[in-house]
Length: 400
Image (cartoon, rainbow, N blue to C red; front, side, top):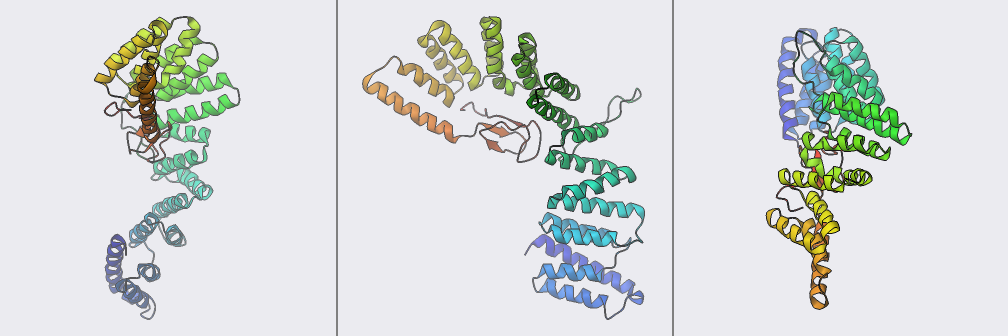
């Protein structure tokens, strides 16, 4: 039996008993008190489900008991018993005597029930009504609308609602509390990703100019949005605007250096098209000095190999591995060494290389900095905690 549910039901039983005592003149002694004691018997027998139904029938809905009904409904929703929670909150709305503000509170709880049940269309209708009619519940309703629009991938609607949640600019007040979404993340951060999602859809349709505008708007809302810079870099590179691509991708170093490895392949293409490979090598070496990571080490090593040969690249890798151990670096070093060996030594190195590759295949590549979710794919929207932009390449002790 759920201890929390038992505690709440016992508390509710005491409250109902006290309330029935005070209101006994108005209650038929053969009806509600009987339901109350029936619920208490269910509770003592270890049957909380039956107790819930009995207490609902015993407790009249009015301004004094509203919070008890809502607390019980919320508890049932958290336990996954959404149908019961919906019944409780619908029961509240069937009472015309409740004040307007309490009716709106019950509407909000019912919308939350519908979201938990996956009934997004019903929840959306309730929340839109609350946004229009309830100043007290407007912002909470808008945050839940964002949750729905994210789930349904309705990015234009999400952008509209998120923009309304942003603080109004004023000459008298330039700062204020950061508006938060349903998952307690900054609305501005989420809004930038909504623009990125919309840009991705526009790119699939071949509308490059509109996609570019969406990405630029994303950076207006969140200048630290790495995703917008990466997408802009890819877009401009594919369009042949190599200088603009480089400019966008080099911003990532200031936005979040942990994402520098994600820029390497496009930077290599852009600098190659401009015939400025040496400039790229200097940039990567500078990044490596301030933010060492295995992909940077490998990129510089490949550049050295192309210009100076395997031996020079192996020497560079050996030096870097001594400072920053890395399985990927070790695998590449073994590959370079195999070219200069033969016989049993080569077979041993080949076996070692396969073992390292197996270790790499079993390790996650990315991890969410907020909840710890890990995987081998970069998710801009974390499947674990539902935060935007918190998943990045695992670095830790550099053994990656």
